[in-house]
Length: 159
Figure 1: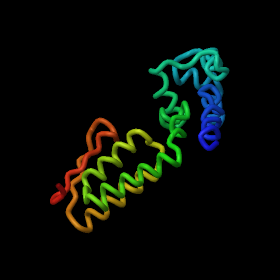
Figure 2: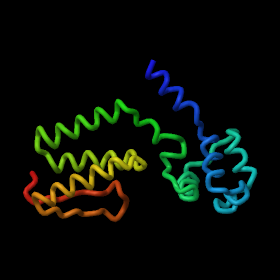
Figure 3: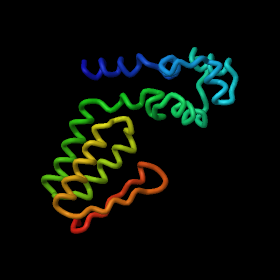
Figure 4: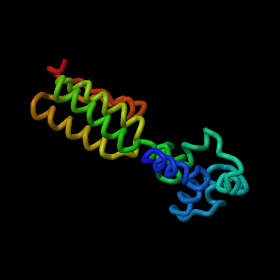
């Protein structure tokens, strides 16, 4: 029953509906979107009516225009359900409290941020872990130049 309910929620918002919602939220016309993306207004109209979908190269530019992530465009950010959260929290607790693997815990969080960039609880957990580590041991955080997914941590005394 719960699975079917969640499945219906995922199916309710399709990409074309989401594109229209986001455009309306930003108070943009189809013509303005088309001009920004260097496509025709008819293309934007077809996307929003579900006749065709934007190509993959267009999705990051749409996400930028609509101030969202590419995951949020097709609703992929909704696919992380409560059961996924419970399993993830359990794996965090096991890594941090039972095994004492602070670096592994950090990497678990970083990987989830890469998969779910719109889940701001993950950022809070990362900050909390970094704060706890700094209270106990100096932390050197190396932020990769490519993307937030490239975050890695080196912690003195963590093995």
